[in-house]
Length: 204
Image 1 (spheres, helix red, strand yellow):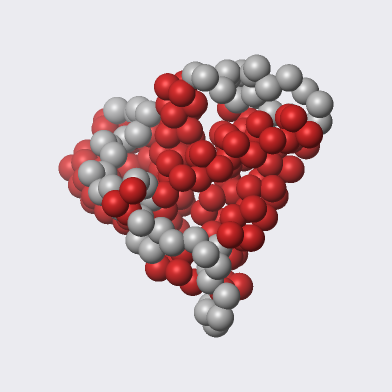
Image 2 (cartoon, one colour):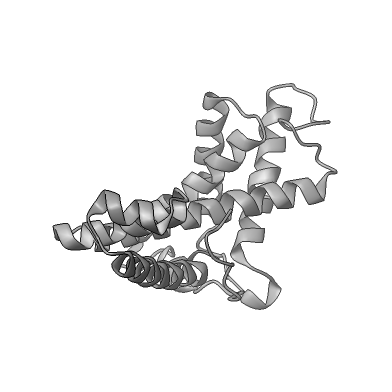
């Protein structure tokens, strides 16, 4: 469960997708960024639907290889939907293709049936949002890691919000006033929401 509601943003910024095209001097860097953003989502989804470790690794490579092959002609159009939906379709189709090549029945792919659109959508979106939250948390934690006071501020937020400890308990354990703990919770929570919303516009 998210610690704050999802952003209302519905569009992916096209800058990363444009940098994937041949001739762009930043293409290699863009592909590394693309892999770092989307490989964890693909692998997380595959694990959630029951793929084993070998299948997960193969699926990530196959999906990204397929996208790489079409990237010179790929034109992202936000008006046609979010990039997350496009990628979900690619992943699910590739899973079916891998099952067929392996000579397995495709009546079910892992724990889900191909006809169970709602379950597929729900699982995909849950993995997507969870990974986005993890990335936002990591980014904010790094931002608060540059000195002991800021580290303690982040720890106060983490203990209150993520570990569900009381303000009184956190204040006693960290040697802070209860007012300082509440301020830390508010300050870091605001930074986390802003980071999460930024990721929403850049990952789709």
